[in-house]
Image 1 (cartoon, rainbow, N blue to C red):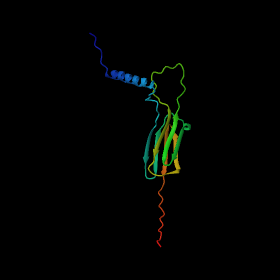
Image 2: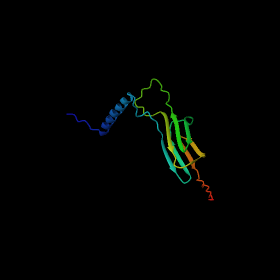
Image 3: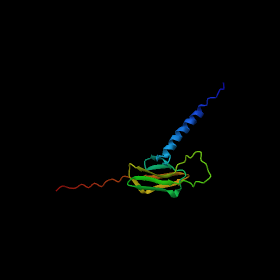
Image 4: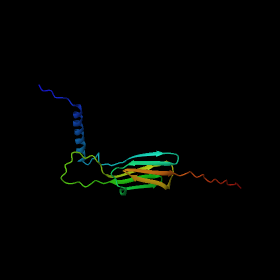
Length: 144
C-alpha cells in the first residue's frame, strides 16, 4: 500500500481553479465578472475642504477627466489595454481594462474656482474648497 501525503493547500488551489473555470465559461455567454475597472476612491472632510484620493494605476493623465457640476464631482477615464503580442500563451490574465466613471454628490456648496487636482504615480488627489455661507441680507419691510 502506498501512502500519499495530504496537502490541503493544493486541494484549495484545485477548488479555486474549478471555480475560476466556471466564471470564465460564463464570460462566453455575455456575462463578465472581471471586465469592469473601477478605481477605489477615498473622500474625507475637514472644516474648509473635501479631499478626494483615487488609486488609478496604469491610467495616463491624458485619459482622465474631472468635472464639477451642480455639486456633483465626476471622475472618469479609460485604462487602455496594451497591444497583445502574438506568440504569447497566457496562463493567467487578471488585469482589467476599460472605461470608468464615478460620481459623488457633495453635501455642501463647493467653490469651483478653488479646486486643486494632481495626478502622480497612479494616485489622483483632488482638494475642493467649501464655499463660506454668505449671510442672507434681510430687509424689514414696513407696513403701511
